[in-house]
Image (cartoon, rainbow, N blue to C red; front, side, top):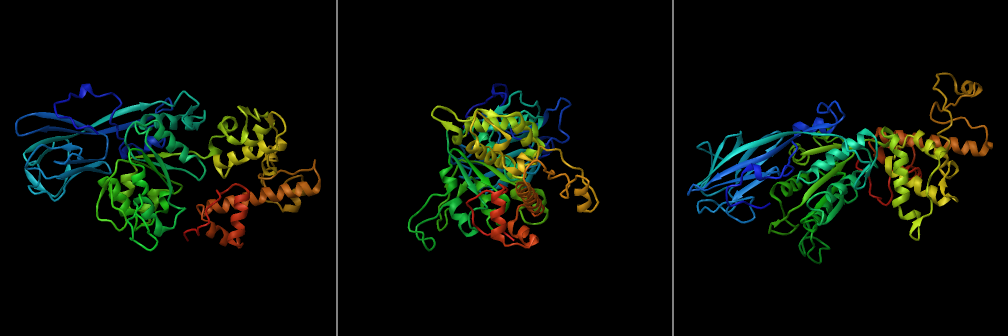
Length: 505
């Protein structure tokens, strides 16, 4: 961020610059008390304002969107002080929850707040800070912004017309140009990486790299080296120095997927990288400055993880400047047809020369897709559309091109009953309740296969949901071999492929 050297009136600032969403606005982001009568969202945008007065009486105004502001004589500080009484890295102002604090960074001449020398102190609007011979007046600018749902059906890679998705697009469009750290929450397969990539593409860092790291797919003892890099000889097998992902993402965005899987002993190192904006390679002593925006994602409730002492509270607040909840696909069924058409239009699996092999989805197939519950969310829908394309022989995907457990989902479903299963069948019902229809217009063998397939998928999905996606615990409750359970879950698109690491117990 540029450091002004002369007075800069607030009226010269762009209207949408330097916005920071405070944790107090999280309920609005999640569609809570901040919702507007029109279905929009109300956000409180907070900015740090410093008015500097040097020994000669010259003034300058600084307005920052980031939650940490560094003060000192070195050029890489946010506020560069031309003051021979200021240390190279003198102090920092940072946000903790809804509050702002100042910390002295072991400076030579100390940091003063309202004429009292401090090591750490709470800051209130109007507080006078003295660093060397430089005076700074601190204040917080708060602005309420009403964000209406987007009027479009797409934003970057986000596609949908339901109110939940249009509200999400409205918030993403607003926060993307800021430097705010974002946490994306939602079930597996809801499209968190797509949202993260869209935020990057709409930000001022769009020309920089977008680096993805899955915290749950790498062994814990290798994560530090992957994120921060290592020096030659720092451990067995380190034959050469290597950049970490934070260095590789410099000037761009790093997306930390499944942040809830990060081990507790690694969380302070990530917190330091976020707060100090520097990393230290494994086996190295030299701090390396970084300029990276962090977007994190999780399918866990991080607030509950903090309460259970499985996630650090300070890291939670540092990451959760903005928290966005992505809806499950079953909560936005009106988007399924639009998503399917988007997948057909953009998927490489449907390319024939310069055109599309399959043009669309038939009405009957769309209704079957809408009737299904989608435990694997958008990722499962993509798998189903790709499979249907390979079976489709015409211009439109038909019901017969869909998997059996979905193509049968549009049949009239039987109401649940507490009667004996044999009595249910005698009455024309289904012993599987309203999940699987009774099929009498196909052969016994085909009907049996469809029933078994639907039962297996629903059974596996409920177990995985009950155990928050933990394969080992779900397999243990099902009393089946974990590898067999994994194969079945992959068969029905309930988990992704490629990762063979053992789950955390």
